[in-house]
Image (cartoon, rainbow, N blue to C red; front, side, top):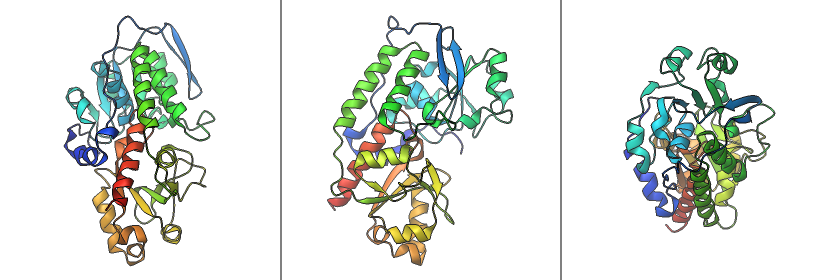
Length: 326
């Protein structure tokens, strides 16, 4: 999963989704509109205090990198790791200037080597001694840590993700980086885009296939996939599974015979590879969506909760509408 920031891989999906589904453009932070410091927050059960806005940040996972780019503070990123794919075109120039620390999870030595004052991660599992470092250990060295709230895996995990939580994170990130006005403007733009999404008629059924072949790993009932499918008007066949993502056997999928299949596109498990697998297996080839080529493609970097979630929902809705128009 080497980090690749060139936008070319994303272009087909952006074109397919149309202008209405493009991510909101980043705004220039207003230096006069700063959050109050010190700022103390409860993040995944850990209390974190910021004496001032972080100036040297390591981002782990695309969702954290893209949040900072969208807030116009990408120049504070001193290193990124475990990037899931290219960023949208409007952030590409800024992304190319970000040093890569590791293609996958960085170790603590590589993180501390760039002297960050914050490690901002899209997964809670980034903060272990075998990865970027335990949160208390980093704090003892003067390095703050922050996990995107939608990724919390303990009691703080949302019972079911909604856009209020997505927008709360954008605002909280704006406070952390001292750009609350920029965050408010970004949320307002996304709320407008969200209100304009036209849901699919009739609540057609959908499979969200993230990865895996022998046993597919699918979007289940409480995380980003469920939120995006619901917002687009689709009915998730795994909605009754109380998890963000979960394994689901082909027998159950074939029995459900979804109207459409959402394919998560990644370097390590491309949408095209998934299509070939479905067509090459006699059992899955008989599914309606496979026979009729009713596929929707979502880039992996937009499949997890973050600043591109509204864009992803709009893209899914528009791609479904275009399938119906064929």
